[in-house]
Amino acid sequence: MSTNVRIKQKALFKKKLEMKDIVALTGLAYGVIDDNYRLIRNEMAENTLIYDENRLARGIDLWLDGTDILLSLSLPTTRSEIRLFYHVITTICNEVGTKKYIREEDTVSLKDNERFVQYDEEASIGALEDLQEKIGNDEYRRFEIFGVFNPISISLKEIQKIGNNLEQFEKYLHEIQALDVYYATSNVYRTPEEKLIGIYAIVADVPSVVPTEPYVIMNQIEGVEAWYVMLKKGEAIGYEDFINNLDIKDYYDANHVITVLSEAKIDELLKKYKVEL
Picture: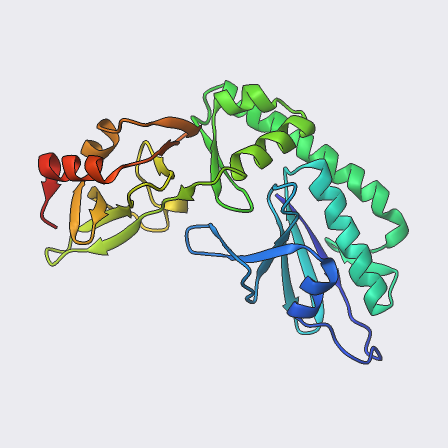
Protein backbone atom coordinates (compact mmCIF):
# COMPACT_ATOMS: atom_id res chain seq x y z
CA MET A 1 0.00 0.00 0.00
CA SER A 2 1.33 3.43 -0.86
CA THR A 3 0.42 7.05 -1.61
CA ASN A 4 1.59 8.20 -5.05
CA VAL A 5 2.08 11.76 -6.23
CA ARG A 6 2.94 13.40 -9.57
CA ILE A 7 4.17 17.00 -9.82
CA LYS A 8 4.22 18.54 -13.28
CA GLN A 9 6.91 21.05 -14.12
CA LYS A 10 5.38 23.96 -15.99
CA ALA A 11 6.21 24.15 -19.68
CA LEU A 12 7.46 27.74 -19.35
CA PHE A 13 9.62 27.00 -16.32
CA LYS A 14 13.11 27.89 -17.50
CA LYS A 15 15.16 25.02 -16.10
CA LYS A 16 13.60 21.65 -15.49
CA LEU A 17 14.64 20.06 -12.21
CA GLU A 18 16.69 16.87 -12.51
CA MET A 19 17.16 14.18 -9.89
CA LYS A 20 20.22 15.79 -8.32
CA ASP A 21 18.42 19.15 -8.16
CA ILE A 22 15.39 17.66 -6.42
CA VAL A 23 17.45 15.72 -3.88
CA ALA A 24 19.49 18.83 -3.10
CA LEU A 25 16.29 20.87 -2.79
CA THR A 26 14.86 18.52 -0.15
CA GLY A 27 18.04 18.57 1.94
CA LEU A 28 17.42 14.92 2.85
CA ALA A 29 19.72 11.91 2.95
CA TYR A 30 19.42 9.63 -0.08
CA GLY A 31 20.42 6.31 -1.55
CA VAL A 32 19.55 3.50 -3.94
CA ILE A 33 17.95 0.14 -3.13
CA ASP A 34 19.96 -2.93 -4.18
CA ASP A 35 18.57 -6.27 -5.39
CA ASN A 36 18.19 -7.40 -1.76
CA TYR A 37 16.27 -4.25 -0.74
CA ARG A 38 19.19 -2.80 1.22
CA LEU A 39 20.10 0.85 0.88
CA ILE A 40 23.31 1.88 -0.87
CA ARG A 41 23.79 5.27 0.70
CA ASN A 42 24.72 8.46 -1.16
CA GLU A 43 24.01 7.07 -4.62
CA MET A 44 21.39 8.19 -7.12
CA ALA A 45 19.66 6.25 -9.89
CA GLU A 46 16.39 6.34 -11.84
CA ASN A 47 14.68 5.53 -8.56
CA THR A 48 16.24 7.24 -5.55
CA LEU A 49 15.11 6.89 -1.94
CA ILE A 50 15.16 10.06 0.18
CA TYR A 51 14.79 9.99 3.95
CA ASP A 52 15.35 11.77 7.27
CA GLU A 53 18.46 10.18 8.76
CA ASN A 54 17.39 11.34 12.24
CA ARG A 55 14.02 9.55 12.01
CA LEU A 56 14.58 6.35 10.09
CA ALA A 57 11.36 4.89 8.75
CA ARG A 58 10.62 3.59 5.24
CA GLY A 59 11.84 6.33 2.92
CA ILE A 60 10.22 8.29 0.08
CA ASP A 61 10.71 6.88 -3.41
CA LEU A 62 11.57 9.57 -5.98
CA TRP A 63 11.78 9.27 -9.77
CA LEU A 64 11.15 11.18 -12.98
CA ASP A 65 8.73 10.46 -15.82
CA GLY A 66 9.90 12.79 -18.53
CA THR A 67 9.94 16.09 -16.66
CA ASP A 68 7.18 15.03 -14.24
CA ILE A 69 8.40 14.45 -10.67
CA LEU A 70 6.96 11.36 -9.00
CA LEU A 71 7.00 10.46 -5.31
CA SER A 72 5.72 7.41 -3.49
CA LEU A 73 5.26 6.84 0.24
CA SER A 74 4.92 3.25 1.50
CA LEU A 75 2.21 2.66 4.09
CA PRO A 76 2.08 1.97 6.95
CA THR A 77 4.69 4.48 7.99
CA THR A 78 5.30 6.98 10.76
CA ARG A 79 3.63 10.31 11.45
CA SER A 80 6.90 12.17 10.97
CA GLU A 81 7.54 10.55 7.59
CA ILE A 82 4.00 11.29 6.41
CA ARG A 83 4.49 14.96 7.32
CA LEU A 84 7.91 14.88 5.66
CA PHE A 85 6.31 13.54 2.48
CA TYR A 86 3.91 16.46 2.21
CA HIS A 87 6.64 18.92 3.19
CA VAL A 88 8.74 17.62 0.27
CA ILE A 89 5.74 17.96 -2.06
CA THR A 90 5.24 21.57 -0.94
CA THR A 91 8.94 22.36 -1.36
CA ILE A 92 9.03 20.97 -4.90
CA CYS A 93 5.75 22.62 -5.91
CA ASN A 94 6.98 25.98 -4.68
CA GLU A 95 10.22 25.55 -6.61
CA VAL A 96 8.46 24.77 -9.90
CA GLY A 97 5.83 27.46 -9.38
CA THR A 98 2.64 25.46 -8.86
CA LYS A 99 0.12 25.06 -6.07
CA LYS A 100 -1.39 21.88 -7.51
CA TYR A 101 -0.25 18.29 -7.92
CA ILE A 102 -1.78 14.90 -8.70
CA ARG A 103 -2.39 12.61 -5.73
CA GLU A 104 -3.37 9.15 -6.95
CA GLU A 105 -5.75 10.06 -9.80
CA ASP A 106 -6.92 13.44 -8.49
CA THR A 107 -5.56 16.93 -9.06
CA VAL A 108 -5.31 18.49 -5.61
CA SER A 109 -4.07 21.66 -3.96
CA LEU A 110 -1.29 22.25 -1.45
CA LYS A 111 -3.87 23.78 0.87
CA ASP A 112 -5.40 20.29 1.22
CA ASN A 113 -2.16 18.73 2.53
CA GLU A 114 -3.26 18.63 6.15
CA ARG A 115 -6.28 16.57 5.17
CA PHE A 116 -4.06 14.14 3.25
CA VAL A 117 -1.71 13.85 6.22
CA GLN A 118 -4.70 12.70 8.25
CA TYR A 119 -5.76 10.24 5.52
CA ASP A 120 -2.31 8.63 5.44
CA GLU A 121 -2.09 8.48 9.23
CA GLU A 122 -5.47 6.72 9.35
CA ALA A 123 -4.42 4.35 6.55
CA SER A 124 -1.21 3.52 8.44
CA ILE A 125 -3.11 2.81 11.67
CA GLY A 126 -5.57 0.65 9.71
CA ALA A 127 -2.71 -1.30 8.11
CA LEU A 128 -1.13 -1.96 11.51
CA GLU A 129 -4.49 -3.09 12.88
CA ASP A 130 -4.90 -5.45 9.92
CA LEU A 131 -1.40 -6.82 10.44
CA GLN A 132 -2.08 -7.29 14.14
CA GLU A 133 -5.25 -9.24 13.37
CA LYS A 134 -3.65 -11.48 10.73
CA ILE A 135 -0.62 -12.32 12.86
CA GLY A 136 -2.79 -12.75 15.97
CA ASN A 137 -5.03 -15.20 14.07
CA ASP A 138 -1.99 -17.12 12.79
CA GLU A 139 -2.86 -16.14 9.22
CA TYR A 140 0.76 -14.95 8.96
CA ARG A 141 3.63 -16.33 11.03
CA ARG A 142 5.53 -13.19 10.18
CA PHE A 143 5.28 -10.30 7.75
CA GLU A 144 8.08 -8.46 5.98
CA ILE A 145 8.16 -4.70 5.48
CA PHE A 146 10.83 -2.69 3.74
CA GLY A 147 12.57 -0.16 5.95
CA VAL A 148 14.72 2.57 4.48
CA PHE A 149 17.90 0.58 5.20
CA ASN A 150 16.79 -3.05 4.93
CA PRO A 151 13.84 -5.43 5.17
CA ILE A 152 12.37 -6.04 8.64
CA SER A 153 10.49 -9.20 9.66
CA ILE A 154 7.57 -8.55 12.00
CA SER A 155 5.87 -11.24 14.07
CA LEU A 156 3.64 -11.32 17.14
CA LYS A 157 6.51 -10.11 19.33
CA GLU A 158 6.95 -6.92 17.29
CA ILE A 159 3.21 -6.37 16.89
CA GLN A 160 2.69 -6.59 20.65
CA LYS A 161 5.32 -3.87 21.05
CA ILE A 162 3.95 -1.65 18.27
CA GLY A 163 0.20 -2.31 18.44
CA ASN A 164 -1.57 0.18 16.18
CA ASN A 165 0.33 3.09 17.71
CA LEU A 166 2.22 5.23 15.19
CA GLU A 167 4.51 6.67 17.88
CA GLN A 168 5.57 3.17 18.91
CA PHE A 169 5.97 2.22 15.24
CA GLU A 170 8.24 5.24 14.71
CA LYS A 171 10.34 4.37 17.75
CA TYR A 172 10.65 0.74 16.64
CA LEU A 173 11.63 1.52 13.02
CA HIS A 174 14.24 4.06 14.04
CA GLU A 175 15.82 2.01 16.81
CA ILE A 176 16.20 -1.18 14.78
CA GLN A 177 17.64 0.63 11.76
CA ALA A 178 19.97 2.85 13.80
CA LEU A 179 21.93 -0.22 14.97
CA ASP A 180 25.49 -0.31 13.63
CA VAL A 181 25.28 -3.72 11.98
CA TYR A 182 25.84 -5.39 8.61
CA TYR A 183 22.64 -6.86 7.16
CA ALA A 184 23.74 -10.05 5.42
CA THR A 185 21.90 -11.33 2.34
CA SER A 186 22.30 -14.37 0.15
CA ASN A 187 23.62 -14.90 -3.34
CA VAL A 188 22.36 -17.88 -5.33
CA TYR A 189 24.59 -19.93 -7.60
CA ARG A 190 24.06 -22.85 -9.96
CA THR A 191 26.52 -25.71 -9.50
CA PRO A 192 27.94 -27.79 -12.39
CA GLU A 193 25.34 -30.39 -11.41
CA GLU A 194 22.59 -27.80 -12.08
CA LYS A 195 21.80 -27.50 -8.37
CA LEU A 196 20.87 -24.12 -6.88
CA ILE A 197 22.73 -23.21 -3.70
CA GLY A 198 22.47 -20.08 -1.55
CA ILE A 199 25.53 -18.53 0.11
CA TYR A 200 25.83 -15.86 2.80
CA ALA A 201 29.18 -14.20 3.48
CA ILE A 202 30.31 -13.22 6.99
CA VAL A 203 33.61 -11.63 8.04
CA ALA A 204 35.33 -11.56 11.41
CA ASP A 205 34.60 -8.97 14.09
CA VAL A 206 31.67 -7.31 12.27
CA PRO A 207 28.26 -7.37 14.00
CA SER A 208 26.10 -9.05 11.36
CA VAL A 209 22.36 -9.60 11.00
CA VAL A 210 21.75 -13.14 9.74
CA PRO A 211 18.51 -15.11 9.27
CA THR A 212 17.54 -17.96 11.54
CA GLU A 213 16.05 -19.51 8.40
CA PRO A 214 17.95 -18.68 5.17
CA TYR A 215 15.85 -17.41 2.28
CA VAL A 216 15.79 -15.35 -0.93
CA ILE A 217 14.11 -12.01 -0.45
CA MET A 218 10.64 -11.83 -2.06
CA ASN A 219 11.16 -15.39 -3.37
CA GLN A 220 12.89 -13.88 -6.39
CA ILE A 221 14.61 -17.23 -6.95
CA GLU A 222 12.94 -20.52 -6.07
CA GLY A 223 14.31 -24.03 -5.76
CA VAL A 224 17.42 -23.40 -3.65
CA GLU A 225 18.43 -26.86 -2.43
CA ALA A 226 21.20 -26.07 0.05
CA TRP A 227 22.46 -23.11 2.07
CA TYR A 228 26.00 -22.20 3.14
CA VAL A 229 28.00 -19.47 4.85
CA MET A 230 31.32 -18.30 3.41
CA LEU A 231 33.57 -17.53 6.39
CA LYS A 232 36.83 -17.04 4.51
CA LYS A 233 37.57 -16.77 0.81
CA GLY A 234 36.68 -20.14 -0.67
CA GLU A 235 35.94 -21.68 2.74
CA ALA A 236 32.37 -22.37 3.77
CA ILE A 237 30.21 -24.38 6.14
CA GLY A 238 26.58 -25.49 5.95
CA TYR A 239 24.07 -22.92 7.15
CA GLU A 240 22.56 -25.19 9.79
CA ASP A 241 26.00 -25.85 11.29
CA PHE A 242 26.60 -22.10 11.30
CA ILE A 243 23.37 -20.98 12.97
CA ASN A 244 23.40 -23.80 15.53
CA ASN A 245 26.94 -23.08 16.74
CA LEU A 246 26.94 -19.32 17.32
CA ASP A 247 28.23 -18.07 20.68
CA ILE A 248 26.49 -14.71 20.17
CA LYS A 249 22.92 -14.77 18.93
CA ASP A 250 21.04 -11.58 19.89
CA TYR A 251 17.47 -11.05 18.71
CA TYR A 252 17.08 -8.64 15.75
CA ASP A 253 13.64 -9.36 14.29
CA ALA A 254 11.25 -12.24 13.64
CA ASN A 255 13.68 -14.07 11.34
CA HIS A 256 17.08 -12.56 12.16
CA VAL A 257 19.68 -12.49 14.91
CA ILE A 258 22.80 -10.39 15.40
CA THR A 259 26.07 -12.26 15.72
CA VAL A 260 29.78 -11.43 15.84
CA LEU A 261 32.40 -14.01 14.90
CA SER A 262 36.01 -13.72 16.02
CA GLU A 263 38.84 -15.06 13.86
CA ALA A 264 39.24 -17.86 16.41
CA LYS A 265 35.54 -18.78 16.16
CA ILE A 266 35.71 -18.79 12.37
CA ASP A 267 38.73 -21.12 12.48
CA GLU A 268 36.92 -23.37 14.94
CA LEU A 269 33.81 -23.59 12.75
CA LEU A 270 35.83 -24.28 9.62
CA LYS A 271 37.85 -26.98 11.36
CA LYS A 272 34.67 -28.78 12.43
CA TYR A 273 32.25 -28.15 9.59
CA LYS A 274 34.07 -27.04 6.44
CA VAL A 275 32.51 -28.30 3.21
CA GLU A 276 33.68 -28.35 -0.38
CA LEU A 277 31.52 -26.34 -2.76
